[in-house]
Length: 363
Image 1: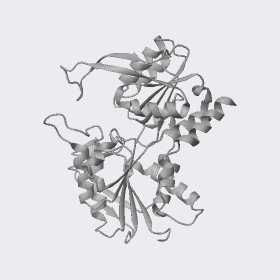
Image 2: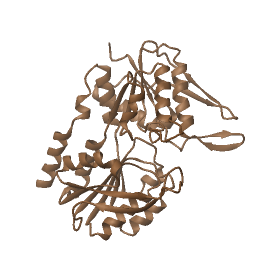
Image 3: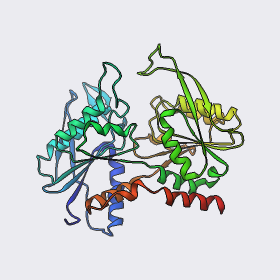
Image 4: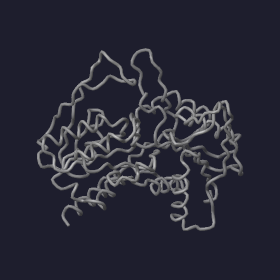
């Protein structure tokens, strides 16, 4: 296989990120006169229907489809009104691209960092099982690989045991950026998980940093359902003393942000010195005004996230929000996949990052 046998099919919802990946691919391969992004046309009709047209040849190429299902900044005119595209519509466009290839591709990989319906990964009673159904649908359409980041529950791949499913964690890249920005975060540090669901992720951060870990227990009102979930009644901390510690709150995503802000407030009241929040996806589903208010109240110092899902530019302008670029890592992974090299190095970088943190603390 030659290096010309891959094509990046980038939807508008991930256009800027896809362009960065292409630029990094060219750097990695020391090329300057090639293009990997294939031209697409996404057509929207006034009744909400749509179609995808592939404008370049993709015959016998390994295709990498880029989609950010969480991008609510893409709009179109529907029945005379401006309509924000939602995850269901973005996922439908993935299927449209696959259909538009007309079976001419050699291999189909879907790069979907924010896994579609990832929070609806298991069934409790008579309810839909959306993530599993979506993965099965992609497999039936001929997708051979799924590349995602920090899946809410990686065990959802059990729904498609024969589908290649790579779940990459951005932990090492985020920590390396934190070392560059402010290595004092890791001095006298404590990692805190906002709930038991994020505990494994928190333990991984603590292992790299070389510190203790604590957790909050979320007591919920099981008699009520608000916005699809039981509301939190109280947060109870379990772990070592946080007084005068530099605390790192770790989670996979910030949705409304109410929970993580309450945790930060509790930690501040308990005497935490510096409070940093890190997550893979900052969704800000109820806007970011509560974060501005919490920052002004001194409840936290910084929020670290990635550019793996859409964040409005007005939020990125705030100096307390640090957005870590993941495009170079994705370019490295694509290059390795194209060369049929193992992806082991992208899953196990703990020792390398641990040395980086130790060096920063001791310097």
